[in-house]
Length: 244
Image (tube, rainbow, N blue to C red; front, side, top):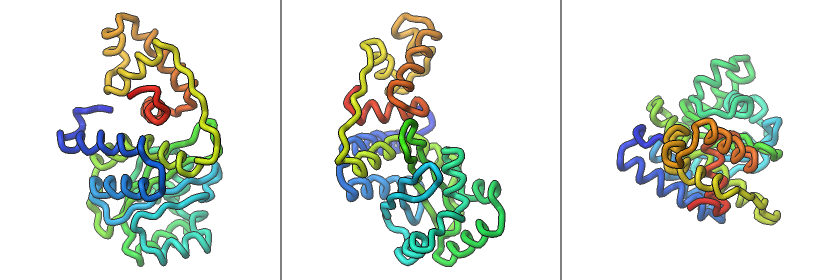
C-alpha cells in the first residue's frame, strides 16, 4: 500500500475495511464492505460477482444495483455482451467503464451500455482479481448517473480489491477445506514489511539483506500463495492468519 496516495481519513477507512474483509463470513458482511467502498468512490450503485475463466457469472452479490436490471442481466445472459465484464476478465485491472467500451466498441457492447443507461447506469469503474490457480475471478463494479469518478478513486479500488476478493471467495466456498499455506520465517518477515507498505529496497535495508534477495523472497511468497501480485499476496496472507 502506498500511504502517500491517501489522506489520513482515507487511510483510516482503508485499514478499517481491510480488517472488515478478514472478518467477513456472510453475504451481508460483504455488502457492508462494498457499500462503504461505494461511498468512498462517490458512486451511486455497487455490485460484486465471481465468474469463471470465460467471464460467465457464477455468483452475484448485489449492494444496491436496480433489481430489474440485474434480473434481466442474469436471465438474458447480458454479461456475454458486457464490455466491462470482458475487459475485467481479460486484463484484471481497475478501470473506468469508458476504457472498457473504448476497447470493445462493437455493436452488441454499445447496445448493452445504452440499455444500462436507461437504469441510470451511465458511468462507472470496476476492478477484479484473477483467482490464480483457481477456476474463477472476481469483479467489483460501481456506477453513477454522473461522471464523477477520478483516477484517485481507482487507486482506492485498486488497494481494496484483493482483500474483498478473498472475502468473497471465502463466503462462496465455505464448505471447502481451507488451503494450508506454509511460509518460511524469513518469508513471513518480508511479508510483514510488505503489509506495512515497504518497498523491496526498504525491506532490504531493514532486514540487512540484498534487494535481489528480497525480490527472490517476494516471488516465492507469491508462488506459494498462488497470488497474482504483492497486493493479492498480502490479502491472502492476512486472510489465512500468516500476518497480522
